Length: 312
Image: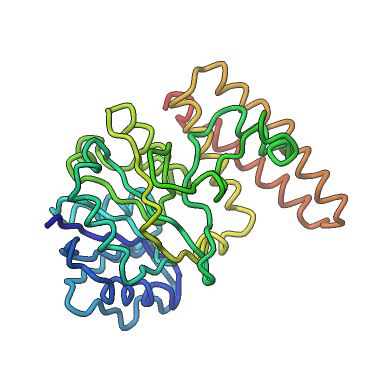
């Protein structure tokens, strides 16, 4: 039977963390053994760590004195175990009774050979499909998102996230979202884990692309369902979520694209995108957002000038 270590990175998720742990403990593990659960806490200030339990599964809590970022915390948790697989699970997820059973049966089948990363179908409280998989980012994807053309002309400017109607069956995808991200441990070690230069966002995309280049593509298993509340931690960041996304996508572009494409993205990021955001805020009368947008882009430009993103 395959074994997996579950790694959960927590930052002020309140009751969601406890509910996530209870769902793992209640899940059928007859086809996939959960050897241990490691919770890495990035200096939470709420009571989310109080009274944690995972029934018969060994539970370890790693407390960071400061917020080290999502990628670094994931790597911290992964080194605590030695199972066949590492399951990176968001604290705002809940497993269904059969989630691990479905995954485990697939991992033991010949169909799983040749794949390095596995994901599941994300659903909401009503069981309706949510964002589960994405395309690898491209200049067209980001240009469409900046201008809204991904909604007006999706054929020319495809959205980054795949729509539910595009995911009607299991199969190979570019990337599954990091809320449920199951990786073969040898592959995780081979690629030296997540790139810790990504503080938040795109660390999973970067890893999936590096895995694909190493000959280990990603598989989406639709029959495995996971409830996902979405963005419980990141919404606490407010508009500065966008700042972190700007940093991550710039690093991603300069690492994986040609230099002309990466520099064109920077030109659009510092011209078209802020103008579009400022115009939207002005039309809606959201005057406070005007100053916040200016502050976010000023901070991003300051980061870009002093970072090593260009040499990533």
